[in-house]
Amino acid sequence: MSSRVKIPEDGEPIVVQGGVWNVPNKPIILYIEGDGIGPEITNVAIKVINKAVERAYGSSREIKWVKVYAGEEAEKVYGNRFPEETINLISKYRVVLKGPLETPIGGGWRSINVAIRMLLDAYANVRPVKYMPGLESPLKHPERVDMVIIRENTDDLYRGGIEWSWDSPEAAKLRKFLKEELKVDLEDDTGIGIKPISKYKTQRVARFAFKFAIENKRRSVTIMHKGNIMKYTEGAFREWAYEVALKEFRDYIVTEEEVNKLYGGKVPPGKILVNDRIADNMFQQIITRPENYDVILAPNLNGDYISDAAGALIGDIGVLGGANVGDTGGMFEAVHGTAPKYAGKNVANPTGIIRAGGELMLRFMGWREAADLIDRAITEAINQKKVTQDLARYMGVQPLGTKEFGDALIEIIDQLK
Ligand code: NAP
Image (cartoon, rainbow, N blue to C red):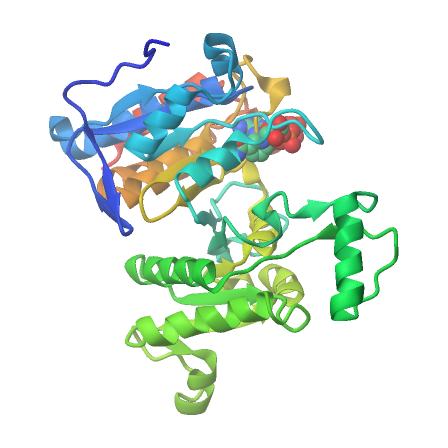
């Protein structure tokens, strides 16, 4: 099949090697509009990002956006939800802004979101959760919430496919093996899933988290685990993460034990505190004492749960963006899904994808000035009560449409000092 995608001649690929981003002034970045509300929010995000880049750098820098197809639109155009041309382009250009994609529950096609993460070996999921004044949070002091959750993305119970129904021959075989070889007797009606946690995968995401904390001048990294019960998976995650901290980042970090023994309970200036918390404790702690948590490093399953719980603290997970990053590229997306009931109505909130692409992606690219403009513009828009219906309904103000909200952000970016 001939190519449907045109690559701009004056654009150049971003090269990410060993986690180091080498970004030309006219980088090619792929985007997938997505399903449901995806096209509306993605196109608004691109306009806002372009404005911020132009305001920050004039004509010296410009993103060369290239639309690639996935999801429902790809099904129409290529007869395939994740066509080969898209796979090849993602493999080549390695940086993608992605609108939400539908994944059916219980059957149908496999998640394209997961396929893209795997394709890019995007092993770290990065989700900043910071309160924005004006949002209706369930907390008394939501302004104390400023966390970044770094979740391992490729290991653990989520690795996929290592799970068998209770009545399958595979589960029967495993039960027999466990009984005969390891003297573990399970009921005959037991379904089985396997929880793999590897040292290599733990240590690369831990390394990522400590580097992230150093580069972004964060205060602490908390390793979240259920190692008291799952000793050789989550307990090992804790142990291996500490090992990386102590061996590779010794000059930058101090452990909680050292703070208590050597420094009278106070973190020495300039050092990043490394501690760990058991997962269940962590859920109550981020609610009762959010100010004590900064970067949270978690294995896949814990990370999934705590990300949404942390998102709820600021009152609206719809405004959050996430990055899926590896050593050779990344995919940036909103935290929410396709919200099908709002599709095509110009009412969806594009803030999540604007944060993902505008803030997170630009920061990974090192385009900090443009990222800052977007951050400030979103805060200012909420401050001026220029919001979409999801927020307007509890702020008691007239909502802006998706496009009009984007235009408001662009106007604010123009006016920022
Ligand atoms: P969802 O699409 O996030 O929508 C759930 C609810 O959240 C909506 O009904 C709406 O709430 C609110 N919402 C989400 N995004 C919004 C936005 N931008 N503006 C305004 N309101 C927004 O979750 P879902 O219904 O569970 O999932 C739908 C599909 O999305 C599924 O196929 C799922 O697999 C997929 N999904 C994809 C991704 C991804 O691409 N990474 C992530 C999650 C889900 P109200 O009804 O309260 O207004």
